[in-house]
Image 1 (cartoon, one colour):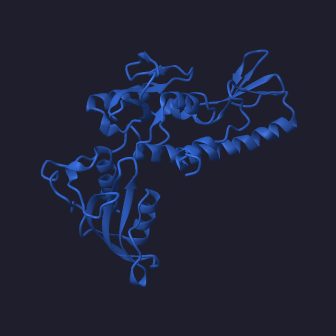
Image 2 (image 1 turned 180 degrees about the vertical axis):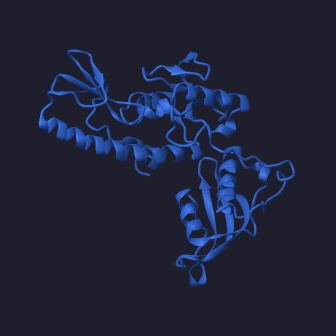
Image 3 (image 1 turned 30 degrees about the horizontal axis):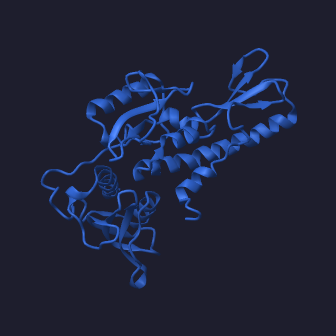
Length: 309
């Protein structure tokens, strides 16, 4: 961190604008307006005729058309990178002040599609979800019931995890998105959720995947893509397990594993062990009932998927 700016905040600052002005569309040759559609593609509007199209209109110079092709490639790459970031922010429960959310998502040409295609939430100072919403293409905000709403003067804004919603509310959002023909950039409302059983809440380790064999190379690759990292590297390059930090909650999930090496053959097998959770500054595992619901759902969901590989 430098000058009080976190890595995530720095990431916000460097999201490319692709030549778009601070507000309004990009104007080409004083006759065509360009905006970014919710599908992360350019949309064109001829100023004279007000005709709209998803392709550059005739009459633009060869140089402008060539520049647009380059910008389209940059937009595609930016959308890919930011989609990965947004899913990580869902898992890590990142929050923004309401004013910063407006600047970053409602007024940013590249990030605005995420405001349209994701379900967002207003959170109080205790971190509890107060209201869920998403943006419409005209930049107004709506609830699942199609009621117009506004950003609050205070509070925090974040991407809603489905475990925070009742089954009824989640079903309402799924119906809303379907009716609006909105394809989410990653699994959000359709995301599997996992909660501990009553008998598991007092435990300090979960053994539902213990003893399952997985393809070592595939397991390690999947784990690392989901934010899990080796706990340590021991003799002969063996890895005794993987851990997944959840910085916002101050919790680290730890999955024991046997048979994983930093270098191994393509056909090697690994055996999964117990899943535990600990606080960032403590080595001893905590009771499952002390683990925040989102952290538990994501970690246990990952492990269940690993066990099925």
